[in-house]
Length: 377
Image 1 (cartoon, rainbow, N blue to C red):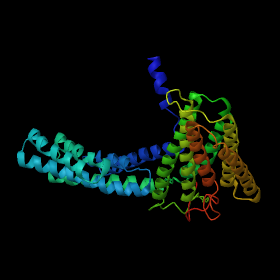
Image 2: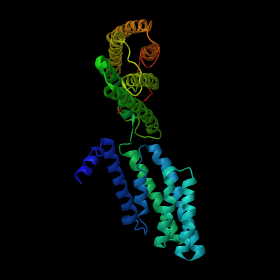
Image 3: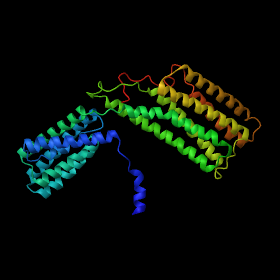
Image 4: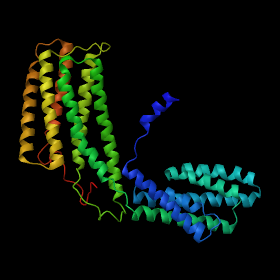
């Protein structure tokens, strides 16, 4: 039991503010919907209202409204199909046999995503409770509409969710994480082994996963401003542009390719020779210089562009290019296998320095030029 709990412990983490707020909003919406239908209106099937209200406190106001349409359609279809099957057969078991395959198929075929599950579950509720008379159908649909209205209203009025802060944090972390990996590689090239090179490659894979997470965060950020009544009330901060993402996606891919080559040169299974010691020394200097460029970009992201960071970036790029020239000189007179390994590293490093030196008009240099009205709050 202790071993099982130890394995499960890392999966449980402290909930963040967004999760706490959305959970409390969902609970408040359900309580409000229940009070309206079960206590005030004394509806016979008040369960439908809080059920719908909880489901519609979504991650964005736009998603709440879209999901409400899908949910109401599925609940209506499930209710009508179940009531029709019961009216035709006059037997609950026979009606279940007829209605469930139809509603399950409808839920899977209709373009409603996860809301398709509501068609068969609603049909089961209708047939299990025998609530398939015309007044009962009317009550069920009315209570669903009340719950949907409450869920949307609570999500839109009470701290409507905005995801710009998450996307901004992910974008800001990219240069810092790249700089950390570059420094680690640059400092460890003198005596790296297969295990350390594999760790570098895994860190580069983490960078690629961070890019995927950022792309998802961008979509949530854009969606969270659609139909959001509170978007003008939030504290606004310039958001990094999508061109910033492109620059760091390229850098992350270069680091993945570079660490993969180093891993293969350290692995006994691959049999690729290591580059000459002089080339490794220059590679370390180049990667340390690239880390300085990333650190300068992080400072620009945090505090804005200034002459000091511009000079710092240019000096580091110059150091990197000087090391690259020496590495290219090491290509002459090498054995074919050594030349192939070193050539791969040289090509990756050349592309890395080019990616870290975007055009002056590129948003990679001016990362804070974002969407009008954007917010990191």
